[in-house]
Image (cartoon, rainbow, N blue to C red; front, side, top):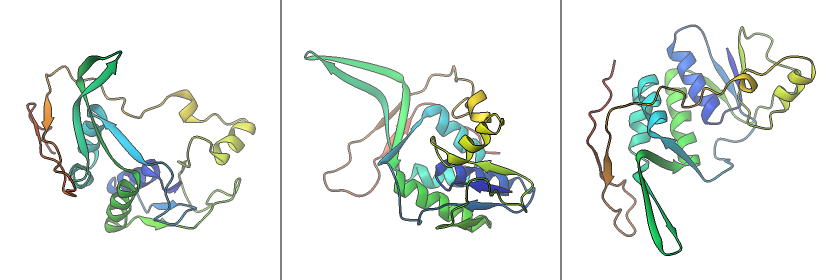
Length: 195
C-alpha cells in the first residue's frame, strides 16, 4: 500500500494501514522531514476523540505537546463574547509531523522523504494507492481530468464522528512565561476507554 504525501493525513493513514496488519505501507513525501508549510494544526474535541480511538500511542504523544482551550473569547466593540462547549487543541505543524514520522518508522512504515512521484506514475507494486498530497493535488487533478472522481470530492471524512452529547469541560492553567513545558489541563468528562 502506498500513500503519496507525507503530511499529517498521509503519515497517520500510513500508521493506521500498517496497524491493520494488511501489508507493507510506503509513504512518499517530496520534501525533507524538516520542511513544513503552515505554522500550526488545530484539533477539535471530536478529532482528538477519533485520534485517541485510532491510535492511543500517537494520541498520548500529541497530547503531551498541545495547548488546549475549552472556550473561545471574542471581543467586539469592547464587549467580551465567550462561546463554550467546543474545545480545541493546537500544536506546531512541524512538531506534529515529527511525532507522526517517529511513530510511523517505529511501527515499520517505509517513510521516503525527498521522493517525488511523478504525476501519472503511481507505484505499480502497490495494491492500494492513496493520494494525500494536499488540496492542490496534481495527482488528483490528473485523475479527475481522465474521468476518475476523487473520494474527497464526494465526501470529507475528517472529524466526522457523531457529536458527543455528554457534557465536557476542560480548563488549563496558564503556561509560565518562558516555560517550554506543556500547560496543565483538567477535564471533567472521563477519558474515552482504551481498547
